[in-house]
Length: 157
Image (tube, rainbow, N blue to C red; front, side, top):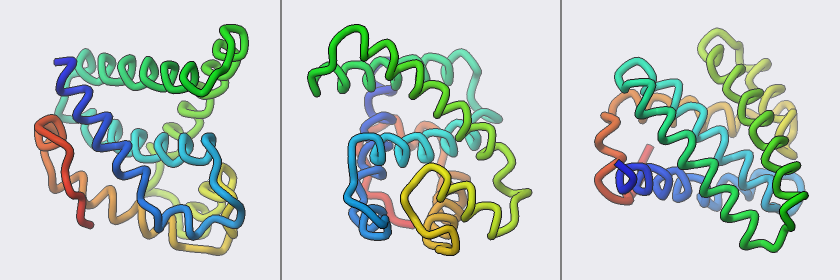
């Protein structure tokens, strides 16, 4: 299953590296901006597949993803104390995003834009990210969980 987790993680990373996402931001991208966009992708991924995939598999994926994030932070050069502090903040951030993602369909366009602008440096009135994540959700609902476990994919939505 570890190889499946790696492929899913790499697919989410590939989505996160979409240059169009960063062109719409009002300041230069940073590691935390990329991580937040990754959390949005991951949050929607978990929301869509929690209905069809066992909680044990999703928990394993969640653990794997946060282990990879911790390794990335270590590679950047953070010390043990700051890694623990940052990981706690990142996990809390992920839970904040998951809470809103769960309600995504119930939010109106204005609420979605405000929610996204709370985490990213984008104009509160810009609909780019809400449109993007609406398309992403639609894309996920048309693909099976196993589709993302095979290899890194050229995503088109």
